[in-house]
Structure formats: C-alpha cells, structure tokens
Image (cartoon, rainbow, N blue to C red):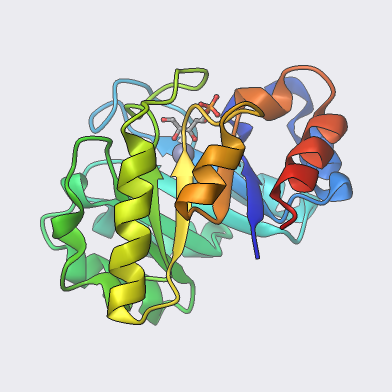
Length: 217
Ligand code: DX5
Ligand code: ZN
C-alpha cells in the first residue's frame, strides 16, 4: 500500500496541533518529523520536546527522520518521545548495524536514509534488517527544494535490489515531491511519499486528498 507522510517542517508552528489534526482527518497515514542538528545539515529544527507534545494530536505513525550526527546516541529518547519509525542517515552513522539494531530492539520500525549522491551499495548487507529505505530527493536541510531528476533511476535500482533480495522493504522518497512528479516516483517503485511544501501550501486537507487519490493504485 502507498502511504503519504506529510512533513511538518512546512507547517505553521503557531497552529501545529491543529494542522496535524487536519492531516489525520484527510487520511495521511504518517507524520514526517525532520530533526536537524546544525551539524549533519546546516539547519536546526526541533527535537524530543516537540515530538512529545504533538504525540497527543494523532495516532498516525510518527515517521522521525534524524538528520543528526551519530544518531545512535538518541534512539531511546526519540522512542520515548513517541517515534514509531526512525530513519538514520548512513552518512551519519559510524556503526550503522548497531544503530539499526538499537532501533529494532526498542520495538519501532527502522530505516536507513541516503543522501542523493550516496550509492545504494552501502545497503548491500544491511537491507534485510531494514523496514524502509529513505532516499533523499534533494540535499537534506531545507524544505521547498527542487527534486533531483537522477533520483528516479535510483528508486528503480533500489526496487530491483529489494526484489532480488526477496525483501518487503518500503521505499520512501523525501524532498521535492509534488503533484507533477509523484506519479513518476511511484512508477519507479517508491511506496512512501514525503511532501512538505506541496501539502502545506494552500489548503492542507485538499492537498492531502489529492496526493492520496494520485497514490491510490
Ligand atoms: C529536507 C527534509 C524534508 C522536507 C521536504 O531536508 O528531510 O522532509 O521537509 O520538504 P519538501 O516536500 O518541501 O521538499
Ligand atoms: Zn525528511
């Protein structure tokens, strides 16, 4: 099944709770939460206290994308704050296997995230341990950027790799997804779609419903 994961990085933070409720009512299955530390990426966003306080707004899956150095240090804290799914960047983990297992041992879903130019070969041995792979469609750090066209081929290659390995791994695409390119991205083999600016610009519920209609296949 295809799932939509609206990124609250583009939300109006004065109305964050209300906007999360709108996403839920419109049927978005996940809430994408971008955590940035000012080191792995230039920006600083939000962390555990915000996640804890919005946990009461919805029962949808909290899809926590850690754009932080050495994320293994904070897995317990993010699980306690309310994460259901945690993505860690392969570029930020000195010990990816250890970190993925630390996530799974906490009983939450585990994903590895790859920057646009990071090759898929980094997933060769760890793939069967992953619930999801997050492929960045832009260089991480900011919402509202343009999708990098070569990512579509990367999605196809990853879907082939997953099929060859006999796994059920989800493929999430994050960054630059909009109504114009979502069909191409799904056709290539992605099944979890992150959208920030394309959801929060204009009517949130209508945008979620439009995405869900396009993704219903
Ligand atoms: C980028 C973040 C994305 C971002 C997506 O570093 O990981 O989740 O919020 O925003 P859009 O959909 O506007 O590209
Ligand atoms: Zn993200």
